[in-house]
Length: 142
Length: 142
Image 1 (cartoon, rainbow over the protein chains, first blue to last red):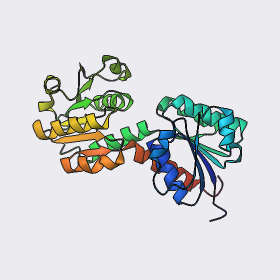
Image 2: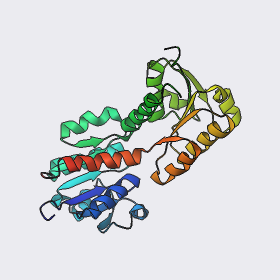
Image 3: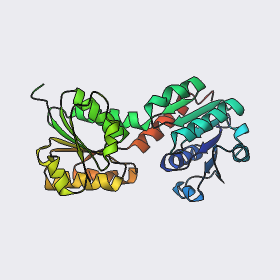
Image 4: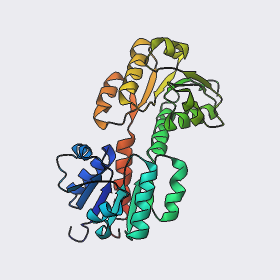
């Protein structure tokens, strides 16, 4: 476990960020959850044992306070694609974080992230595929 | 194609609804897209050849105007879980629509839909699984 234990910074603690924070915390990783609004931390599940840092995800001072320069992994899950892109850029380019993942709502933006060396998940594309997949399954007898 | 051609009502024409509307329209189905805000229809892709009906997804008169009573399939993709649940209930219980799909952001609500006979997709759960899956892939060398 020691070898695989990562220091992970999660920027944006809504439903997705808090869920992932709880899972990673339970897996034994060291997690810092950050959100601009303190009440977002209420989303964190009971098993979350990491830190909470309140503040903007695009302010360098706040990111340093959240120890972004020590992070093995940064996950950008705010509700704004623009904020996630900014966080991802800062993490990769300024703080040389080795691995960055981001949620991106607009599928058209995924290439920008790829060019930055940032892995993305796009809930819009996944939900569309899942809906169309469900139709294909039951297409004969709707 | 004739046998499989469905009459589909999509309630909520944001990124997900409009993307799915375009795909289903291209597949030859007869699609009606509905949204409370006319500007949402700007999300519809060029290949969309169906109807646009402006109005609330929870008003029966508007739903009738969108011919919900003739629909083979209703897809609820507004950004509000509560609205999607209401649309799904009205479609299933009042208009006896044979198949209803809904987006639900809060995974805790999925059981309510299942009890109604409504299939769901949850972007939050899918995005969390995708993020954790990406980490598991590259877990050794973050």
